[in-house]
Image (tube, rainbow, N blue to C red; front, side, top):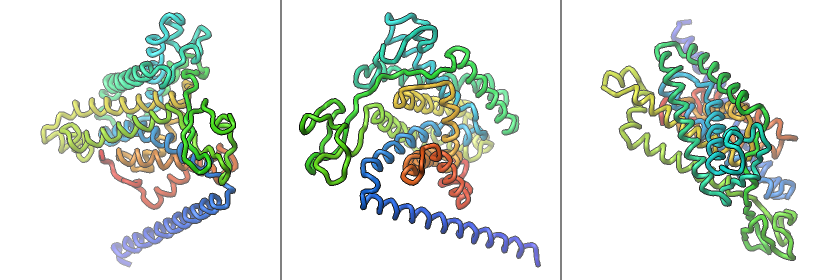
Length: 401
């Protein structure tokens, strides 16, 4: 058989196998969709639980997408997977929250205790009472500080670690980023100790639901019918009063800021000279140099943008969770990688969409899973199945955009 014929047959066979897997995947998703609709219709799955899964998944997904932007930018512009990305997020969040505690907790505790988030003392989150509704200025300043600190840290790592390795192979740079990750992580352990930190007081919660068929919104401390607290009313489809979804101010802030930054980044990439230069470098860095594009300046802005979005993501995740440990960025990195690879590594929009898919998968899958322990493996399973069908991810390619 001619060599060209064999290659053709191999290509046809690969296409058929891919279509077969795609058909199975689509059929399986369709069956899950039918089962979900049946469960909602019969009441075996309360609507409130499903709404909570979707909302929580959206929160996780937007956070992952925002954090994944920096990882995608680094790969598309510099051509390596930055394993230190998660620990950079953690370091920026620790320092940013420490400075915020100093600025807004001055006089409540020693400066060293505030800066180290309670190390060496008995400082707790309730002592400062930082929430979006109670101390909005502290949240706003902390958000800006953490973004700036993480961007500065990213620039510093590039200047002293990654810039000297510009001409090295991607494997060497990858190994260097692993070393940076461990260095940052255990520097945090040295200064902040390995214990979990509680940083945020309990935020106010709004409850969305219905009362006698009329849509209502109530605060967590407001009362409705018969003097009962709204959140304590049992959820039962078809009864007089139903609490369908609880949303707090920190979650709303995360959604608003994440969407705003994503839109802003889209405008920057598509409408500004810097964005066009970044897309040109991602497409062909050698050609970009010959056309006079200042590549080092573009690289520096890549780190600034990636560090800023990552810092914002880290701060908002901690604000929403209320706690933080030295490993939170490292554990988050696995899901960030899954989101970036699923969307198409190097694609900014792919990172965003991939993050939302991963976030929704980890929560909505709880409809069928016996416990939350299995949710994360399911997200990676979905990633693998999508990659079998589309090896370059949903958006594909090493491109900024």
